[in-house]
Image (cartoon, rainbow, N blue to C red; front, side, top):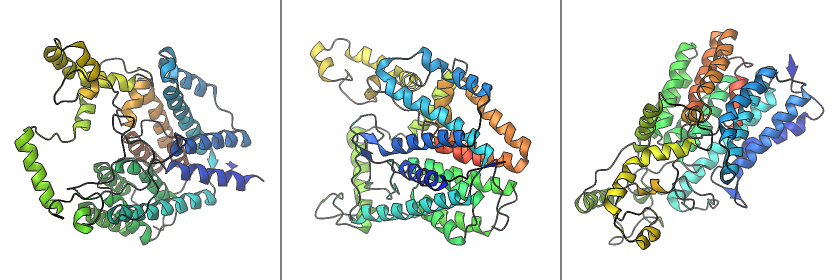
Length: 439
């Protein structure tokens, strides 16, 4: 059995810690390069280095499966989306390399300690940012574009009539959950954790107000029951999480002097603003508010493509999704605006003048679901690859199998469309860790 030990262990540990830490700075970029990407690239080189150092030879079938997986992308390659494609292919291959590597080698205690320290750091800096945004304290400028359809979208950090949500160093709460929750799971399975860790975790995840984390928390507790690992710490975790998930922290009520709060007759409460806004919206626009539109759109797209070919390539998954969503808009555009003067169509990119989702006619919408994005990009082979990992895990033991299954569920529900390389580390590590029986 191989171990991650050599004269250069300290350097590799430092680089591993650096790459992991950089991945958490999703909301920032340096010279137009997201820090998040830099962390992923550094981690990839660490994986290659460890594969070489431990003299691990990849089986021939690995190369064949990876080539078949990216074949739809290669066949549809276009130079105008080369950067996008390279990033997706890079992440996809890095993920499976990482799974292979860390399912073969042992993780040293130092690596577990590194991850634990980084998670605590992210927890506390996220709490500070949460408080800073409410009371207008200083925080690092968020200079990466938001996740809206426009390239220049600013990140949303203020909710006028809803509870403030914990963003941490991420662009959206759901991105925070997608990366930090797998870290929490990893620590749950690899470290002796005290009550404080579960309390602070409950606070952090509760403050995100994310529907995704609510679902993941319930799934996690069910799996702990199945593995007979449920304890008082998990009860405390869910209790604290539920309290902070339900409690409301409205900025303009807590901190009326917040620069983002509107001034109407000096100051009015967030409840009043919500009432006025809702009334105005209903009277003047008479348009119903749509709830969970993105989830419904994703499910509709899955249903429409269920019997069609999935292997669209990494560059076409989002564009096909957008085409599906834009059908109604394009039909409306044709009937309403077919006689408009040409200069109006040039001036208004979406062609029609009015209300509706006309941005679908000129901007791609991201699927924001890891499993579906890779399924539509790679094809049914992607399901086969995940099943191979799962079957191999259950061949080891039922406990390992259920841990791997839990991580596959969490990864698949992530809003990161890329198969992040660090996900591969967490998944591969489940083959080599022993559940802490003293929790």
